[in-house]
Image 1: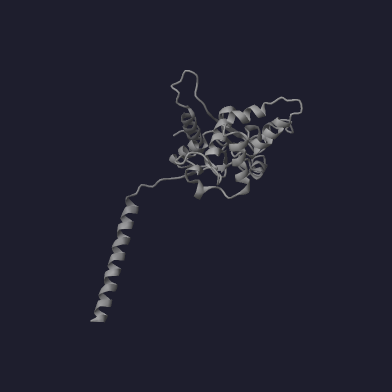
Image 2: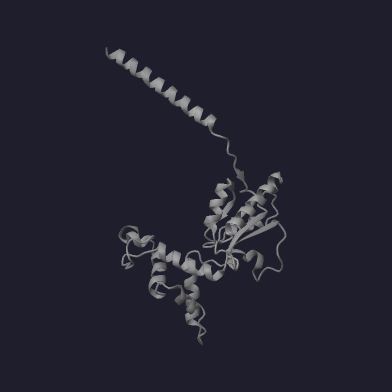
Length: 250
């Protein structure tokens, strides 16, 4: 009897496995092919923080395109490849941009939202680390210092930091400290820093070697518009242009 049960169980298991494989094969056959458009070897995306980069990537995934992203700060290795003579290096660059003041305010508030410390007194229940301060506070000393700087030194207010950056006191001490503090704030790299290899003081002219195309995608709300950013339209047009450059207009 025991041998019969073992044999029957083995037979049932085998039958279930075959049925499962058959169902899986049918689902695979019924699923339409979805191609991917890989531009990682030819096109670099400088994902500038707090300038619509997340929206750009969402649209990119929806169109099933893949670019080579660089985030949250510039990469000297990628820059070297962009201006390289090597035929295998990428020759196109996409950069998302936004009004620098809007970026500054957004970065300040975003970092304040994400960071917390054990003595965080912000109201519980908000998004970010303060929602569960006891459990989710950062343990990195560097991040704790950044949070303390934003919350204590600049009183959780981007205007206070902005005023310090514009301070024209005689010795300039406050202004210089504010500049150093700003560099410690996540997503604070300026567009000048991202494109230093193109517009820096050390550059005598725009390099023409390696980099052939520069696509700039602005996050904007035109005057008189319906207050809806036009960024999504810019992104879709850019992605369509990339597809046309690879496959033609048809």
